[in-house]
Amino acid sequence: MHNHDHQLDEMYRDIILDHYRSPRGRKDVADPTVVNEGMNPSCGDEIEMKVRLKGDTVEELGVHCAGCAISVASGSMLSEIAEGRTISELKVIAAAVKGMLTTGEVPEEIELDELSDIEVLEGVRQFPVRIKCALLAWVTLVEGLERYEKGGSGENASTTEDANPTVIV
Amino acid sequence: MQEAVNQQQVLDSAEIRKDFPILERSVQGKPLVYLDNAATTQKPRSVIDAEAEYYLKHNANVHRGIHTLAEEATEAYECTRDRIASWIGGVAREEVIFTRGTTEAINLVAHSWGGANIGKGDRIVLTQMEHHANLVPWIQLAKKNGAELAYLPIDGEGRLDLSSMDSIITPNTKLVAITQMSNVLGTINPAAEVAARAHSVGAVVLADGAQSAPHMPVDVKVLGVDFFAFSGHKMLGPTGVGALWGRRELLEAMEPWQTGGEMILLVKWDRATWAELPHKFEAGTPNIAGVAAWSKAFDYLDRFGMDAVRSHEVEWTRYTMNRLLGLGFVNIFGPKDVEERGSAISFEVEGVHPHDLAQFLDSRGVAVRAGHHCAQPLTKLLGQTSTTRASGYLYNTTAESDRLAEALLEAKKYFG
Ligand SMILES: Cc1ncc(COP(=O)(O)O)c(C=O)c1O
Image 1 (spheres, each protein chain N blue to C red):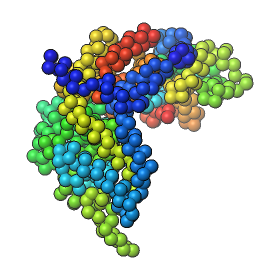
Image 2 (image 1 turned 135 degrees about the vertical axis):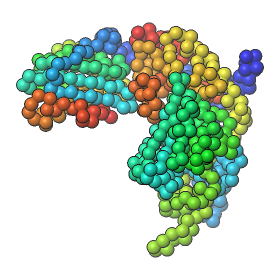
Image 3 (image 1 turned 45 degrees about the vertical axis):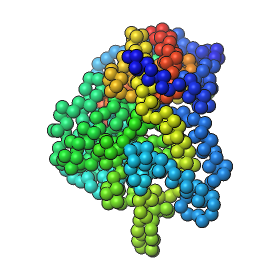
Image 4 (image 1 turned 180 degrees about the vertical axis):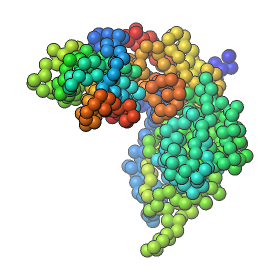
């Protein structure tokens, strides 16, 4: 019994609950370059992300997430580290977060503990059905960016409002 | 009220629990409180033993061997058919078709009857509270055959609003498919009233009995429907078995949905003819062990009678709803009047997401369901992305409702 309470507290760390209660990055982004929506149909988490790029660098990023504590906190943490980073940097970080949550392995060149609070998401790994809650924001960001890259030039070229939302399964 | 209290004692849940081995286990170091009965129910020892006994003593294929085991297997299988025929109101045994469950039963009707009888410009009427099992097959059929869909709306308390029924069930309506009891809202629908209107325009009526058959007396003749679908696993039986009842004239006129062994009369190189009902709709080797064991579930429920099961649940639901509402931060969806609903109680807790709530409750040994409960459009209509659902059965006690309420209070503090 203790063991499980401990596990629960490992997942719902105070930092996570703090992000859940007051999510960062919950703002509107003017003239977004990339807009993507993500959803987790099995639990109903929904996330909307808007990004304004300058070149290949994220100038501003806004996240609105209606979901569980894990998905909201994860999106909030993402918003804390995204601005000022390039598309390729963010993809590497997203892959590292995925590694931390699934195999437990993080590429050596990434120091997640230097990336704001992201490292505390690790406790979610004990709860396999919740991993996708933690990944939703990251997958939504990466897919949005990839659509933008494929869509090519011009502002709003890859605005995904008409596209299918990113669905995490 | 006094009468209700007496009725509650019709069922001695503490005694009943002893027949369910799994209820003795603990979860996360705490005695299990199983409140996910709308998803699937636990099984009494008699059902578990019957499934094992079939494999230990009688295993053989049905309807094909002239040897003792095959005869015993066939008898066990067919015996459950008789059981069901009398249990749903004394219908003919040939009208009872075994399926994998409610979902397969509805798909059978949609493909076979629907495919042949619903065409371009025809209308299919459903309700806003259907489970995906009674929604998606009709969406697919409408798309394929060019039919239109219309929905009977729900009111603010999650009851069917029949005020516009006559304008929704139009003369071009060919089928009305309606759940008898909602797995999300708990609502018990006036299926007979809807069926009467449907029949007045010549439509056929299917009732989804997945939630009603386990929890209340069912008589398909009184309901006045044409098809009735339900699942064994939601009524103490094994998973992977269910049944479709249909009116004989309809079933006889229908083409088989699946074809192969067991369902034929004669096969030539270039054609085949079909076996008589019910075998026409039972292609291939069925879940014989599951069907055989299902009969023990009926035996078990019959020990008390469905009126007693229903009375027990009415009282349990009343107690549980009052307990949850008493917390002050719980909002319950669905009818407030327990006489109008079953024991599936979906709710929201202000400030706590259903998934976090279910996770927390699990750490306290309390099993509930969080999500859209296979009813995404309804969940959206309720203004939610997901809800939490506690659903009871004959073995649930009010002490367990207290455990639920206490855990909710803790969760509210934890996340709040
Ligand atoms: C109202 C309703 N209809 C249909 C179903 C589908 O039943 P099954 O999954 O046993 O086919 C369910 C249960 O999940 C249900 O609650």
